[in-house]
Image 1 (cartoon, rainbow, N blue to C red):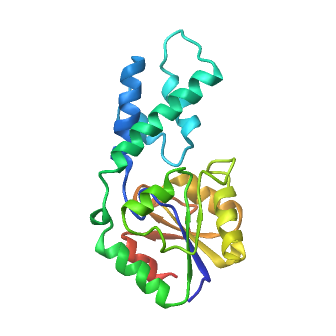
Image 2: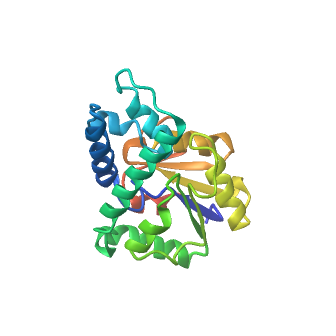
Length: 212
């Protein structure tokens, strides 16, 4: 195999929780009387919770919130989101993704998660992958969001693998940029397909097998 490790973003790559994020942010925005739609939601992809809140508050008329109020709102959104995540199950993990991950494991590759989400472990537990990955780097162990590469560097560190020997799989341009900054090759899937900074385009998840 060309690489020693593959680091996967979670949401939009391994599984899809975008709709739950959208619903939780929409409920919060409605409470605040702030306009929120799918287009604005797309700006939140790969962005930290507090940065996402700031994007939503761009449309808050006149009122200035304290740091404490913002933290409280972000926590409220997260509680709504976690309640929605309880609807997830192993059925939310596609057979293609599971089969591909299993095959990569048989080839001796180290597999890790590199996600900005603080709920990564909860999501993995819901879909039956809580003990599958060799390392998990997520929003609980980083201070900088993508396109800063911290989350991927931490994943490589946890794996004990040099960044140059890792491939990142991402569905967000910010994630591709983060990988590029530290010399990691990247596979662009979903919305990131066609991005010029990506090393490979992945029309589907199993396309990883052509490049790993």
